[in-house]
Image 1 (cartoon, rainbow, N blue to C red):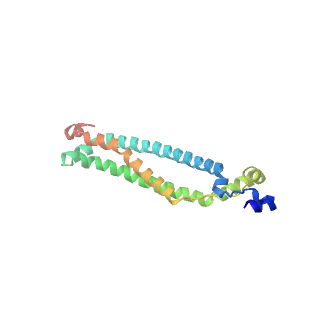
Image 2 (tube, rainbow, N blue to C red):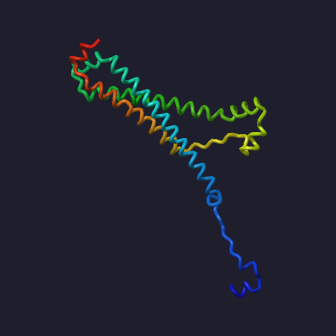
Amino acid sequence: MAALERFHPLLSTRTQAFSWMQSWESFLWVLNLEKTINFFLLLFIVIIAAFSVMSSLLISVVRKTREIGLLSALGATPREVASCFCAQAFVIGVTGTAIGVAAGFGFLAIRQNIVNGITDLLQRRDTLQRFYQFTELPAHTLMSDLVLIIVASIVISTLAGLLPAWRAARLKPVEALRSE
């Protein structure tokens, strides 16, 4: 090699190849950070919705105290009474998640029409192109992310039913039947 370098000076310079992931490493890091932040925002929204499920079921426990007492008097165990409220939370979670997924995919289907409508209304398509370098709103849904969100939503909703279920299971049949 040394003999070749003497005759041709370009052979002495070294070149290095980079993959596109190495070349765009900082940009990919920012995109991953945005994805993580979006995940936590969605998680907080689901947790807030779970508090709504929990409060609705707690109100249901208070309103149905006599019925819960009747179930207990007829021989239902505290575990069976609690499972009724956990099952209600599960059904609410499945229903809410199904509606949310359907609405989300529905919005994704019309997202470009919305962007086009806004840019046409405001006459700012060139501004969108200049600052964001695109006029079409891309969307890429990973099946693993979708499954994670669906499972987490249903599990969190079902867990939200544990406190109302515990309160319902603790009711004494005699006291529950006496309440108005």
